[in-house]
Length: 312
Image 1: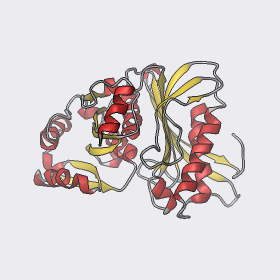
Image 2: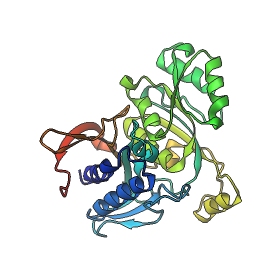
Image 3: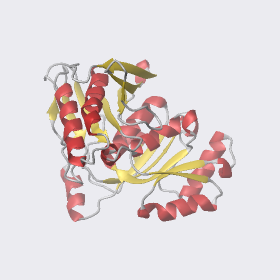
Image 4: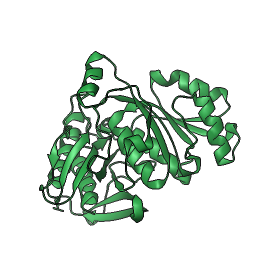
């Protein structure tokens, strides 16, 4: 529950900037709110993969130490604002997220692009990032007891995904595009009400690690491959101990333990969570999700009220 307070505080810090077209202010507010709360937790935490280097935004930087220094040693993967542009423009699906696991359990990698594919629990073991999207769709359809034409593939609306979308269309399947927040897109495959069967595409590596942790807790599946864009990024991988940046990463490579958890709070209304609402009493209402793995495996959705200037 300490980490629930982390995402709630980050989301509330962003609330005043919704729709104000101030992207940097959104990032700064979310990052400051998350960092302040993380440093109050009795833990020795290290950020193993963070957000912000690619667009020079404020960030919880890789190798940053968080917490009081007392308590368990943990790896942390964070995105203080998943969908900065969405918050700045008042659009849907922005949230704040964090994934936590025992020290040494989460992929330690630079902030760069990653090729990804994800499915929910019913299609676990049916994906292979080395195979074509069509082959993966055939296997997922068989696992789900569907015809391939009944599948829905979630793909980020980017020029780099034009061929991927066209391949999905050729099978007769449906494509659901999204603009940002591929954590939501990947995790949505594990929830029936989202009506998403498979997620595929290229996005940020931090979001990949966070989504993999959530799916690991729920029994879903995820594979990735880091995609350095230049020699400098390839060298950064080597410097962080990743000797083969082009290696296929299974969900067990990315999250090496079942003892992990994922926490998210909505900033604006979205596919998984409602955004922050101000009540007639002047309080702020948050909507959050906590997913735990291992022996404590559980999914909880919860609402909480706060005064706008309240401390946690």
